[in-house]
Image (tube, rainbow, N blue to C red; front, side, top):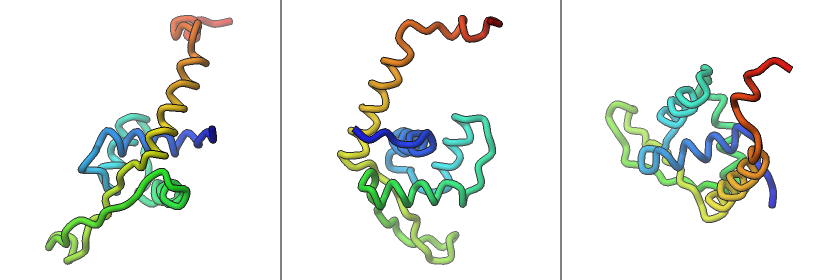
Length: 109
C-alpha cells in the first residue's frame, strides 16, 4: 500500500464527491469548502497531474463551451487504483483514530 499525501487524498475525495462535475474550478471550491483555506487554482493542478501520472485518476474532455472561448473542460474521474487508495487511507485513518476522542484533543495537557 502506498499512502498518498494529504492534498492528494483531499483532491481524490473532492473528485469522488463531485462525480460528473469534477473539473478544476469545482474541485478547488470543494477543497476550499472542506479545508476552510484559500487555494489558488494553480495549486491543485500539480497534485492533480501527479494523480493522473500515477494512475489514480483519468481525464475526460467535455464539450467546448462559448463561455470558455470554445475550449473544453477537463473532467477528472477516479480509477480503480484511485478508489483503492481512498479505501486504504480510510482504513489507516480509522485505525489511527480508534480510541482517540476529539474532546480529549481539545483539553490542555
